[in-house]
Image (tube, helix red, strand yellow):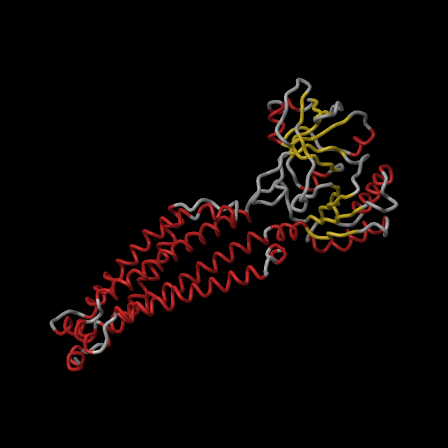
Length: 441
């Protein structure tokens, strides 16, 4: 699924990638090298005076920029990770465990007539329910996590009041029990509804609240726009997140399809044990009714949920990878700058130690000095992390806002590793012999 979504590699993308690579190479390779060459003294001057002030400030500025960008990516990674964990634990309105799905299309087949379609559905459901291990079975026209187009409109009560937009759905008896969707008031459709007269319907919770308060909605009548046929509400169910856990729940009205089975539908069966073990048996049961009917989408509901989460998982993984890679580069840069600073300041360090400074004291001094650009970079990065909230919301709608907690966690990790990198780099001070350093000078 992720590969299908990101199939946009063409000449424009290639040209953009080449351009970015060239600009990045010039900006972070050639320009810093040119600046260091012109600002950094060499030879005897280095040994006499250590690092030039301009070069020192440049290195501090680069470290601050690197720390700021790293903090932005780390805070974003923490936020994306929290958002994805929220998706994994989200309540989508039904239970995906132990569910088998099999889709069929009756269009263009000999079963494609109102009477034959309903008879076909009844035979399929009877055979599914007869499979050992199947607890219940039903059918639906728009399958949650799979449907991408819907029909819908507003509902109107007998008094003329109207509801907000709802999606129309057709389901067979036992559908909500099979899916594990909670029935709040009333009941769900049963097989005997097919022989009754008059239309009945089931609505979702928020839509029911717009019609009447609490259980008073049961027995109320509604009709669709441009239609005079009244439907009596017999049940209220929890809404389902049709487009995935990262999208809002969908308000719906359901009609019984036992006598009006759609030409495209999906059969669902709740089984005992692992749903994967019942895939073949359920597929064979559906095919045995009419082998000319195309059968597809033979999957467990857990597989469908995993496919729905493919893109959010991919985006979260990419963000985590870049955050980790940026952290690695930042630690390498901080370690390298600290180590190079010791090389440049050998004479200064030798003098300090010759007049009584301890090696640990010198290391602590270098650590304090190195933390100033790191602290400045963190302050800048905290502001940038808060700014990226809109970007993360576009990548993962379920992602929480980048709050102080995410920034604090990212800053704590970054500061801890930076201190460790600087302290490790300053370990070379322990190897310095002040007498030998002064002799060389």
